[in-house]
Image 1 (cartoon, protein in one colour):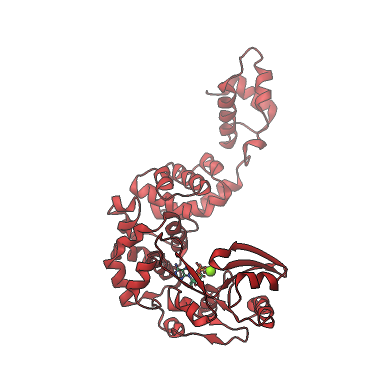
Image 2 (tube, helix red, strand yellow):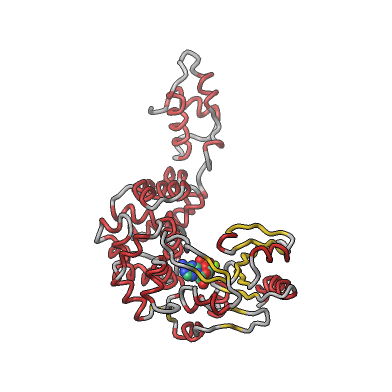
Length: 389
Ligand code: ATP
Ligand code: MG
């Protein structure tokens, strides 16, 4: 409970002003399961305006939906007013949000019973949908009828599969049945929201089961690119292991589907960072590993690269990679002993042009491959006599 101490003091402060407040969502769930707890969300009967009056530092991050961010003793807490939601006609935000004063009404709008438990600062639980017995049975049960809840917000189907991946739980019979029958509802959801769940899914310990579930329910038919590659999800489910990032997932999907990373990035509206990492991984996975490949691989992709080589080529290169990385003569181009201006001064008669960049790159590669030492004089010699460009 130590991790909750500060959150409980935030709750106490709200109570002292006459409001009710609880810890809710993933933190309560993960605590009850015995898993590492992520962000701490608080729900309260106070309206956002009232919350703002209680605390000194408040950032109104989603005030129209009742959420503010409170800075309290160097930590941030999302505080959301108890609410019930109207229809989701844009499949992104509910049309209307009505603040309520009853925590049970707030818990009723939540997706799965394991996510609909509130914890008071005394540790006492408010658990109107018996989320605890779902935890005991390792089951994902929707709050209310699966058909209604998935129709309201079809992202909940994807969230369900994501929780399967993270928790290793089973979907209850109704939830699974509605997913199978109504899988195409998912296509109504903004792809960015699906991608956020996909990232959590591909990192989950039980990712194999989850990918199998995407395959069996046919949810893949509602997903860009997957829907054009009926074999892809099956191939993935045979090979997949828990990954480290969405970039790894995209790299693997790109290789198996033989569709360029750029297609995935466009159709899934992914960030530049994901694009760059996935492109790097794919490019390097398409050649055999040597010093030059390792040199070009950004450090932060080492683990992912090894994982993908193992999945895609079925070989273990981890030790070889770290040996190669440790013996690299330079780590990046700024460590090269010569620069463009050296080349210009050594060839004063040549007009400036792309030869400078090409020659520098050739020198960099020669150094990395130990064909010439990273020494200015020796590189000069190499440039005059030995180089092969
Ligand atoms: P994580 O550990 O990944 O943060 P989480 O369960 O906390 O998982 P969040 O997306 O942070 O997930 O949402 C917090 C809580 O809000 C959930 O536990 C759930 O009660 C509720 N919630 C989130 N998204 C939905 C949704 N689409 N429909 C209904 N309830 C939702
Ligand atoms: Mg959360």
